[in-house]
Length: 244
Image (cartoon, rainbow, N blue to C red; front, side):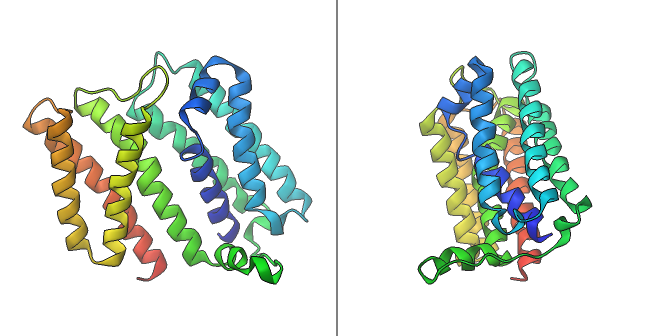
């Protein structure tokens, strides 16, 4: 589980905050764009797997993940214009998650290998070696960045607005949503579920009404419900893992 968590964090970082509009547009226009994205993913995965690089099976597995990620993204880009909805997004992420799960089949995949760095870099060592901080990072990127893309697909499915333009999601829309979800995440951990729920309902309903993303009352209900389940189920699951 130790290495798997770090590989999952690498996937979230590379697939969401580091997949900018320029990378997204580059991916759609040329195969080299896909390689640029999966190359970034490979680099982050290697960095978060440094203690495992002494094992040949681990190195081969990282190359395998890079290859699988590339193939999945090639297939996704080919079908982008005809099939780009919530179902396709969830299926795409499920494929990536399933490929990461294969790490448990490796001899080195079940080893707990800690990072050892010079004194000046001990803060990086503490972060890497702590499942608490890694899980917190996974929770944050999942709720804030992956959740942003999920929310825009929810609006596209149940509302009337399509945030996905030819050049990707507008930077303003994307990072306002990331900020909104970051506030929910930190209010929950700083204060309580009750306060985060109040902030969530207040800000989400105001945002939907202001942007007119909905078709009717039923549309608002479904958008808020799916978003609520996504955010708070992840936070609840994370809390149980962290024991907080």
